[in-house]
Image (cartoon, rainbow, N blue to C red; front, side, top):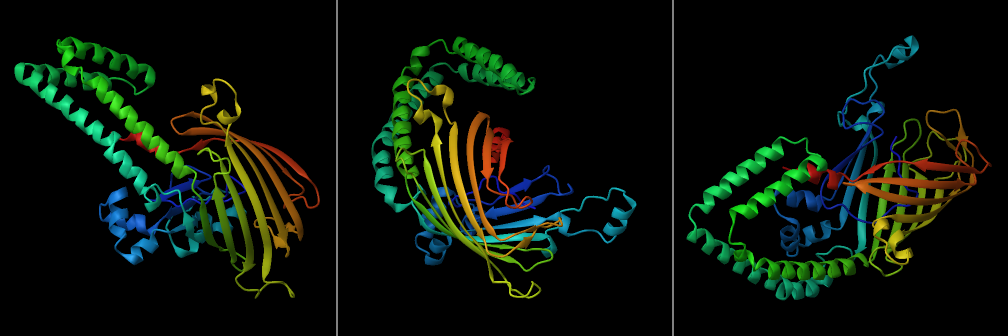
Amino acid sequence: MSRKRTCISRGSLPAILGFAVENGALSRTVSGTTVTFQGSPNGILNALQGKGFLEGYRDDENVPFLKALRHTAFSVTFDTSRDSPPDANSTAATGTTSTPNPFTGSSRQVSEYSFRLALLNKRDPRDKTYRPLWDQIAAGALQQTAIVANEVVQAVAAHRKADPALDKRLADWQADFRKSLAATDGSDAAVNPVVTDAITSLETIVDDITVFGNLKPYAAAVQAFSADRTRVLKQVSKGTIATYEFTNTRQVSNPDLLNHRLVFETDLLKNGKSDFTLNASFTHFSTTDGLPAKTKSIRDYQFGAQIDVPVASMVTGPNGGFENWMLTGSWRYMRLLESQKIPLTDFTAPTGVINLIQGKLTVPIKDGIKVPLAVTWSNRTELVPHHSDFRVNLGVLFDSGVLFSRLKP
């Protein structure tokens, strides 16, 4: 089954189709693996038409249906264990290992699907609220960067015209550089010396270094543009998100569970980094047919809160060593109105109140890899009713966007 890594849902919408494979490798034949596809219909349509992040957004402004569609998102989870082969029972009886079920995408493998609607999303940098800020940058730092860049191009073109042999020397330098890079194993330790030698070699090829004198004002213009861009994005990150999410969890031997959730997320400390999230939800059965007599339709209701604060903001003096470290505190309250049998066990979770408190420190390593260290307390667990439980969890998170960007040629 699919497992969530935090006890609080977040409110952001995905912009493009993505996928996640949990509890196993990226393989369609790994036993016990769930595959989740998630995305936004609007983002998929723009991708199929070859429209970029900004182009698609601008074009949608004139189409009311597409404009409304950009506020929606969806996800579908497939569980390959639900599509057991015909001889599964006989295999279990003999004690032999069966072939893992392949991912087929059939309706039998669908274990959960959800729909999300953004009621308010002020964290989209394309939102019209931030257009005056982007226009100001375009008329200021960005225009100055273009002017200085053009001056650099003209200076380099003049230098190449004065020295026709320079093109051949640069082409040979580029070929040698690529050959040296290809001979490495791709590690930083192997690549860094190659890059350093290449830069030194380039300096010897271009004797008249003064031709690149305009690089300094160009670098200054780029830095000014980057600073302005960061300022706007920080303003965007302070925006508020409010979403409604509907989730249908398809149970094997019980009626489907339908969950309705409201999520509110804002920058509580107004520093562009911290997040405060509130959740409120209730879950009900799709039908009470097949359930014990007098079973109520509503199974539970829940409330939760979470705050994420960067460690660097709490450290006085130099804090470069704590850059991107995140401290998270969360609380979840659940009132179980109907007892629920736990899948794959003989246990039944009794009615009552479940409180869950979690503290987590997320430490970035490199290239999208993060190590979360969590401490969790609960007044009871689903398997040990009416007893408190204390756990320490250590894991590894991978940011697929960063990892995949490293693999691009």
